[in-house]
Image (tube, rainbow, N blue to C red):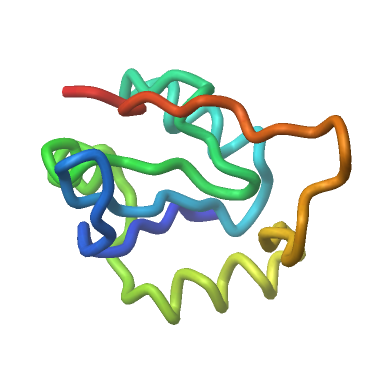
Length: 104
């Protein structure tokens, strides 16, 4: 059971972001993220979006640094991958408004 983090290389909201995942369970991931002070709204299907300003804190707390391909492989092998749906959204569904999650 390990928490993994990729380098902050994903742009958004004027910052760079990392992804935080578990290879065991969403419960383990939520517990780790909560200890870092990340709100649940930072959870996106199968990972937490973590701003670059929180990267070192996550690593110091025990997150294992891996490349994005390794992170995706671990997530997929654990059976926890939830990919985005492709194509038009079903009528009556809407993506929630996202603010800058897991602020520092």
